[in-house]
Image (tube, rainbow, N blue to C red):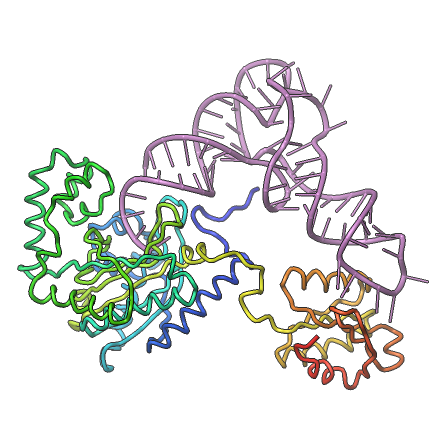
Length: 431
RNA sequence: GUGACCGUAGCUCAAUUGGUUAGAGCACUGGACUGUGGCUCCAGGGGUUGUGGGUUCGAUUCCCAUCGGUCACCCCA
């Protein structure tokens, strides 16, 4: 094989594509029903936008970005996530003048230079949802509920767990106070931490909470809990969020270790996880980022959002025959025998397609046997719901009629050419 | 970035301790069946055995490198 796709990217072939269409369709239905509007964004932005929003010290910015200089000398980057670009658009176009919250969603490819493995690709796809300009906890709960609803509609909710946490905010009496306490505790037990955590302890202590190594976990069991340090604003905010979730009957667990890797998160964070995808257990994740819009030069609007990993969702969906996801439209297979018949059938195909019927036309040079076989194979492969075949050969032409054959029963009858289109339309989807 | 396992037709897989023209099923094309499908039978096309090097009289098989895949660490969707 001399020609290859680039490492870590993948093609979505037609059979798999049916699942993607379903995921995207249901996403749009659910998000629309919660009052969100779709926004389409470029897949690359100026590099500093990501550096500023995601955080200079994060793994994403440090080593995972596809960054290059364009011909004009500007440093641009293929987006590693969608929030930064969406907020850029929000600020740039003054979308904040509308009544809050502003609810937006987008979907498309993201790029991160990582070592590929199960459920992890260098080009992957996300559904991204953001609600901007409102910090009321009912919005947090609604966003999470909408995410759960999306998975319910895909019949996947039962296989996922909702984990939530509150990270507090940068108020001195909140997360900073906790961070100080945590570092004090970790330093006291540094000898029992893994090498990495000893470094993380100084650079980004909260991430130590996420470490899965047994030795670190033992130390962390006795560590102070962030939840006990939430300030007088953040504690009730989290409490209310949970109340509203319970009011909606959303089942969740509080995961004190849920820290997440992007710097901008404050207060509510959440993840939907599964045990079915190997090490990549997060199917969707998100949280609140109240200071970020201002940091990027916009108004001091709060925000909350999440991203869904489409590849991971698709992997959870059961395999089905192609075409089974959508209502297959009735199909007609037109079989001309000879060039004159082809010329006569071509406009018929056009008229039927205009009425929403799927039409396949033979080219007139293949044997009738082969064309009928092909019609059957298409049906079998679920690529086309062929219900009728139309046969038009020299004999039929001479009589000014065509044969309409029911592919299920095999029965066929002659129909005048002048009424052929109407007849096929009248048959509609019926066999 | 680190580690483990794997790479043979489009797909799923064979190929005796290294042995000569690398096979099969499915799929595809054509024929049996001058204009009536799904079945059957026959035939055909398709491979630089991922790539490069080495050992050997001889390599799909053994060794090294490289690329890719898979999985895990890391990180996350």
